[in-house]
Image 1 (cartoon, rainbow, N blue to C red):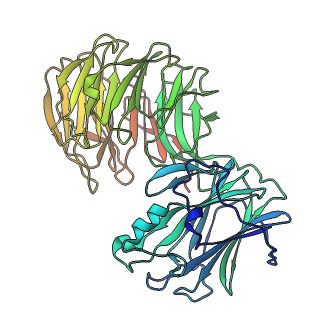
Image 2 (cartoon, rainbow, N blue to C red):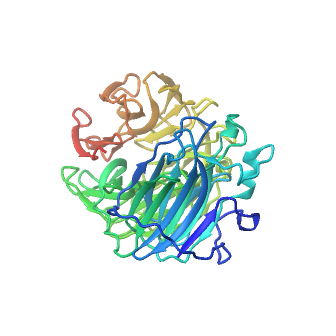
Image 3 (cartoon, rainbow, N blue to C red):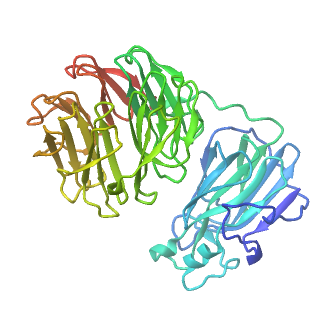
Length: 545
């Protein structure tokens, strides 16, 4: 069966969106297919093509053909002449996706195609053929109003092909009237190996999907990047990371755990989720309150009550932050860009049930950072950038049931990063960061000896951005800087010295469970100390590449 879809489809088959899919997605009648190709199938992502050299004479997408033959499903993208001649296939990249979820642009939204897996196809600089597309004075508006072109198929593996985004030189005032069907999503019934062939006379990009043999399972995930870590004592801890398999660009969440303070690690089960949300909003974090109770939060909230052996989706809403003391948990729901409002949720049973606390000062806060020192005492620093909400410090002495508003020792120009730490109900520290740029950021340290009623403020001169703060006593604390070092103080913040020097990639976080035992990390390396930061040893390394 062969289906040929010319890009010049009538308006009746141009859909305004593919977020909601139905049987009305257009199909075409099959015709005979004489094209015969050979070659091995691969299960690895692929790049190729020659690409164009300028906007004035780009290769042009002429048609898309969907074809079924014995043992394979086939897609054929045909191009007209471009800068490199009539037989030049433009630059392309083909990336496998574990789910058929894609990001459609303008308006930006996540869409799900038919099937259970997917392929992300990005063409480089190509142009839409003028003979097939009619442009108005503002071509980008015309294309965006038409929306993605969406084709359903009756093939066994390729279930749907959708045009998701355009590269639009007109938006940069370069060759007005030239736009590109550059980003395509392909929904697959299941993961499939494929082969790619570049043909000439005319130039065509052929993608064949193997329907005769099931694709092997992806290889084991290797820790490619460290995202977060959490410890409940000097021995037991978990690291959340990005796990990648050979040959596949998309990575998944993975968890490793230790029972000896980080000397040895084993892979622990994790929810089967993309390491990075498809829409780019939010990131994943991990916290454990006891050796059995933990929470994975970010775009959603998951909980475990068996030490990470199994995970359950608790809430589908976005979580900006979470802190716990034993089974008592506070979660901050929302934040920017999800409406730029934060809500406080409390749980007394390790997240099995939740109640919402009315805190009006959080209603216009796009950012909020909590800290707790025991079951009863804690603080929340809240502020807004889009909402222009001034920094506010909230304090509780009854486990979060009620809150007192205090003045925050931050200037009104607080940027997107700040950190709060405390060692007792009276000793609280706040590091305020301004708007970051070029590796620099104005930073202030505020210290209070009376729970936040009064502050002593000093400027910080370290390079990098505010990333994290750990306080172990009224005199000792550690500051992690993105694009900067890990710094420590032993005199209450009057002076600081470098504890781990890493000004290139910078530090991601620092954690202490007592005055002696702590962990700090870059994206590629986790360090541990058992002598209060005097010495740091490597505890876990991500696999480069």
